[in-house]
Image: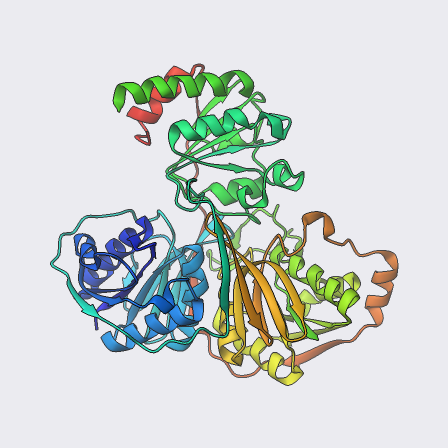
Length: 320
Length: 246
């Protein structure tokens, strides 16, 4: 009857989203008077999930599951849910989480709601609030099935320490790869990704051309941030599509989002709205982004950005 | 190859979102509806398969009669036939059940959906169709090549991409990258005229109870005014001491 939570890892290391989703599952388990069981695939030190409230970890160690495979991973999660007789299954709404969750839900005949932004408002009936219309609104939705699959929006709940002694149990369910084979993975390992970044620095058309991105990258590097861009910038080929954030691009839910030379079209603002603190630097005080931002500087990006980078370098030197 | 492109009928990306009936229903007043952008990238890729590899392309939508102009637009872009399942789409699972039925009856071997619809952002229908029909499934698909029954798909992952090999029947959740923005087609007059005489079939829904139900909507709380600062020193100070993000 425990709450089951799927914890994602990368090369064995649990992601921050995994720590967050365990913290969240603990919140649900407390409300329902039960405990949290985590399921992990090829994760190192699974007992460490106890730190965030897991009482038990079903640990799958299987070389055949080294590469993410949605069908096989959904087999693992569904088998774990059955093993635990879980009525609530929690999966982070990351890219892979959103890939696997609908299949898990279908396998368990469970209703599924993604992008959930907080603990259930009620557990009977089971109602959760989630973002819709790409963060332009929220819906409260009731899940009516006996088993429920909840997708937690990234960075919506936060990581909460909740020291618990976690027992680790080896788990080896049968899996099948759904006839999809991974041929190659092409991933920059030296760069922080938009999905994982605490801080994102983003540039728009106001930067006038791809040759001017050096100062954006330097600011990002100083902050340990990921770089991103607006839709016109990716459409014109100044930056790769993978950097396009907005309604039809990637969603951003970082702690800090810095928009440079981005006017703030409604589609862009929707895509970054889940970020906690937004800063805009733009020479046009009428730019719509100023209505959506927390802090703003009206000024020429070509002057302000290098100054900001210098100031941050000083700040980092003083504050470690 | 027989392709089915699943089309969501969604508010245009510039729409202001409002609710009616005590915040229990989406207010369609003054809203322009379009083909869901992620689906449109997939539809355009399907046109390529039609023109280069002789594929047949059908489009399908689950919705009321008000969604027919969106299907007609897909026909004007070049789809051969359209199907409308006459049902108000309530949740992802009940929609997936309808679409799985269409897939089985029509013997489609490539089913193209979008990564997510931009209205409810569920992102669940393609995966559920794959499960219900036993087809393979690739989500976040940014490139798709098919030779005989073998498919090579590229999937966007956090910080990179992944190349996958699979086979038909296949369901994809597509997005930008399948084709470029500049490849998207605006229907021309000839296409619009032809679309009028192309088949648009209405089918009754199969039984499928909704598993989830939205009970209440709300808009985000209004935002406080932006704090304008005139120096980077002041900005860094606020980010450190007030927002506590650096």
